[in-house]
Image (cartoon, rainbow, N blue to C red):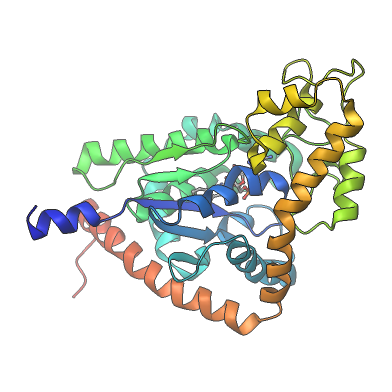
Length: 340
Ligand code: AMP
Ligand code: TRP
């Protein structure tokens, strides 16, 4: 192989994903997103953003938002992401995100945004504040992804529709101006892409629901035990994976499997005839075991604000450099006047 071919072969593909610093992270965020970020970090160039601009589409208390941005940086690192290998930074620190979002707004149709199920759900939940940002939220997400010529986007299944819109916008833009954007693919885990609420297992586990419906990443072992013990199951007593008819039991099996306890069917077979008490004990063990190293590392990190600040500062500089390369190309293509 020639040197040039070698360099090309060594260039890793790019991963981009983001989490909103808008509340307590849940076990759903961990299983659907974070855990996969960690698995992918060695094989890809990874960019993991703290998407504070998305968070303000719902009213935030400024002091809380400020604190949560650093806390999310600590969670990223505590879950195993090496901030020297992965770009961990705040979206609002790289102005290219908002600038490209504006441009892409002009390539996105109202009809497309009207179809977004998350917009419909969030408008219903925040009927007093259906702002334009909530409506164009997926366009900002497309900008995030496209700025870095991203190949792969690890997310939970609730983001699939947004990702498809991102691909449509990119293809539309490329169709007019040539190959400006890489078309990204989703990376949605086979098991655990949608962890369900402990109390209403037909619904996604969400940080905006009441406390007892979700496991927070930072819940202690007693709290985890209590919440799982109270999780809604059903009355037939049989341990089997059947999300349609047995959503509660299936959710616990998915959680265990996603956390490394084996294939779902094998876990179900092993627990055959053992009763829901045992199923819940085993689930608790798996969750506590998965979260406790993250929690102790988090406690250590979050006390060191100066370190966290230096990570997001440094990484934002690198991110801005990469993002601006794409932004300048886009600006030139669409005909903005050249800079002197
Ligand atoms: P958010 O908390 O909305 O910023 O979501 C951050 C990431 O976590 C996204 O990739 C979501 O798809 C994922 N996620 C959120 N809730 C769940 C859930 N209940 N199950 C699986 N993935 C989830
Ligand atoms: N919208 C995503 C969520 O709520 C967060 C997000 C913002 C994101 N920008 C992104 C995820 C880019 C992946 C890629 O979960």
